[in-house]
Length: 223
Image (cartoon, rainbow, N blue to C red):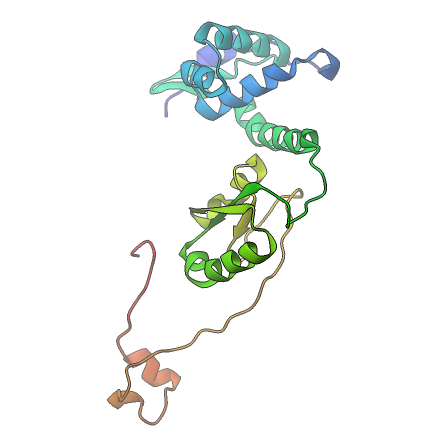
């Protein structure tokens, strides 16, 4: 993607040595998060329920506050500056942590809880664990609902950090940030399945026989 570097340098102002948090309106941080996610003023405004003019005003304030253009015009539209790219992930994590802190929810009581948990996983959870999970919830937490999202494993940490999902079930384990916790559920072994009476495995299945047989591949993505 082409970026007008001359415009980037022209719109950059000196970076403040220190930002006084006491003087920052929290709504500006919410607006900044939307701008960083959308890279578009109109879409960012719609994301947080502001008018386009209000979001443009917020962007102007943020530029002055942070000493950076944040969004500049590229060949295909507006793009993030390096400083904006640097802010994206920490800001998402910070807002998600603040949201969790402000919820002030009482201690979780499964028997009386009435809420929905969003679980991110692959097809494995639905076929192997979901029936048992639903049975357990029906018995121990009848007011709790599960919403299952099938997503790619490399997106799990970001979804957790943003608060979009409450739990992920994944194999193999993925790298997680300091604000996330992991727990091993169980270990499984691979097994080979062949049709009954297969002439090649009557005396057992060793590695050499396995390698020379044809195989069936089951893949959610078809690769």
